[in-house]
Image 1: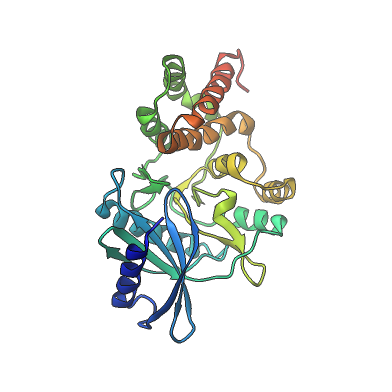
Image 2 (image 1 turned 180 degrees about the horizontal axis):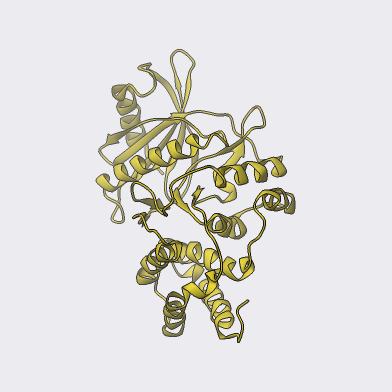
Length: 306
């Protein structure tokens, strides 16, 4: 959480940046704090409101990395907006302060998601939006505070292999679990036999804390970690850290039915996010990672995967 001195500097930097349409900040009100960012509502002298996200540099992420994280977020928000599906906050720009960096976007009065069926339909529409024929994104970004490598790949399996290996290489897994992670990487193509994958625009961090609805009850998504990837990969974090109902998934699968092998791939997509949480937040997530790796190992030990 930023202190008073830090907040005062943030106000000065916002005024100097001109990102709030050049108007003077009259009030900067904290609206939340997480393990990653402090967030504020900035109200200007003429009554306009803006959303401000402030990241304080530390041993994990220096100021330049803070700036790069927000630059990647701007690119992600812009990519989501280009699909013409969800409402996505318009990014207005980023700035520097002595203790880190900040991002300014338009402000919306958000409330909890109420129409999950509509959300599921819009998620399917986003995943069906036309994009490139390769997997990746124009720039690397972050999943939380973990770098997320997005180098373009022709093959989804190759892309996913690199994505998982990056997480596994950092993870404090015990020896048996590490062997199971290596087994998964070696056998990853088995999970995609006879599966055709068309790249979808993936939000990348779509848990229940990164979606809501606006004052007009339109679904809103934010805080992305975007890439073009397998549509099923989006559902991994939604199952882990979401409060989403059956009606959302039913509406979604009406447009994008479950493909052959869906239920066997699901643990892999959950595992990516659990290992990332292990790497960011520590051993509280270790047992869940171990259990998922055992489930995947059991699947590989079956005589017939499908």
